[in-house]
Length: 224
Image (cartoon, rainbow, N blue to C red):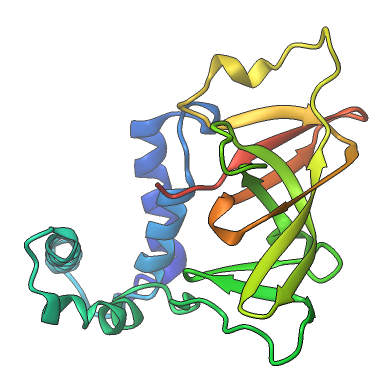
């Protein structure tokens, strides 16, 4: 009997839902990544608990090896193989590294920083939505959209348009669930204010959804 990826993902989703509750009470992105991993496993002719054993052993071995690679006493020569390990056992689309500077100064459509791809809004809106620190001394990130990516000599910088905050007097319903559900309500409009920041000032990508004419919820997509 063949259990295809669809049945695997459905059963996994059901199990996670039983233990973690509705979406508003739990962050489902790690589970979605796990389901994507499960879908790639060959489940043909696996009977009598064999499939469960394979999944458990594979997960434990991978988790143990990743933990060991992050230990401070891990030998340096082993750390050099981490990029190969990530390519073999990580997500297929993941690219590790940072884009080199342009040969000539100018605008970039996309830029890779530490394995994360960023784009200007005119190229890819989703990859332009970020949470960032507007200055090197700022302690609280804000939401915005990358308008331009500038390459000047050996440096690359982002020009980011700020997401407008909620008007005074309006309450944020998502504050009740923070930090368990890392979302915040903003105005659905953008400010005229822009910030020029370095890639290191970007905290993470974010997702934005306009749930009313005047309000938009911004979800932190950081994996840390």
